[in-house]
Image 1 (cartoon, rainbow, N blue to C red):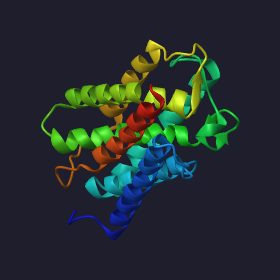
Image 2: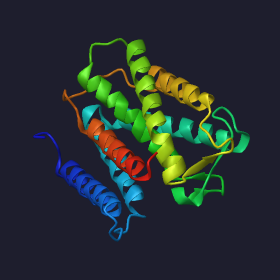
Image 3: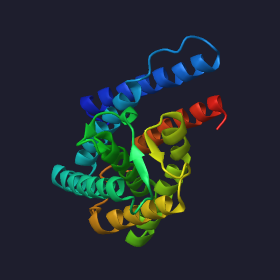
Image 4: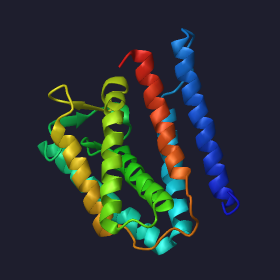
Length: 225
């Protein structure tokens, strides 16, 4: 933490405080008490993590590499998610709901590509921080597999707890997981900068992802999913 800037520290504290607020609200609901307001919490958590992740990349790589990675990944994600929403391919037939926030052109929520950007980038940083010696192919495979497992854990929460998107078959199709594995593998293999991290043992993105999983696990436990 010694090399963190004041902005990074503030963003991290904001994430921890918001995460504690959300988890406390879920526990309060579990105990049968009045639920504290949580409607804005997911959006705030995502905003904090997106901002912190980009600032982290700017310092771990450099501003040019970080900006290039972020813009390219977001452009690909926007294109793929828009195609998926309009055509049902390559993920399977689904549609977004207003629960996921402001919608672009009545098609796709603004938050959708940023969510996947955070997940993919988060696992990329974790792999580079804790397994810096693996090959580029092994890195892409590891990140793609981690993202796919994370999606498998996330889907019941986003679909049946929060209702962010709905699968027309009322179940998550296998091709969704195959697609996310393939997209992630190609993004990391083709677009990820070849430079390593400036500071080793970077754990913050892993902490962010673990925080999301804590929300998912506690919510699913409360609802018996």
